[in-house]
Image (cartoon, rainbow, N blue to C red; front, side, top):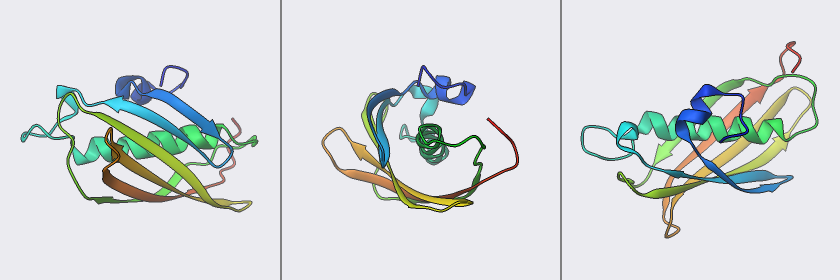
Length: 128
């Protein structure tokens, strides 16, 4: 996403579609350099999309501290291929003072669930 301070987010080149208090939605076009040898969206890129969009969700919160990812669990259901548009959506499930739990989902443009993710982020001592 173009507004992000993250070089990785710039490489992913997502487009922000929606911002709500409980989460955000963004789209990504699967490029050749995002695929595995079978021509499908690489699982590591999928995990990267999740981690990046969850981080973008975090930056929309009112906090002065950085909350790094402490775990990330991804389940894959279906594949996307080069040229496909995929939609990632986050949802804040539980917002504690030191731990925030989020979930994210990756869909095809037709609305088919491709993958889902759960992640905890924890308050650090590092100020933004």
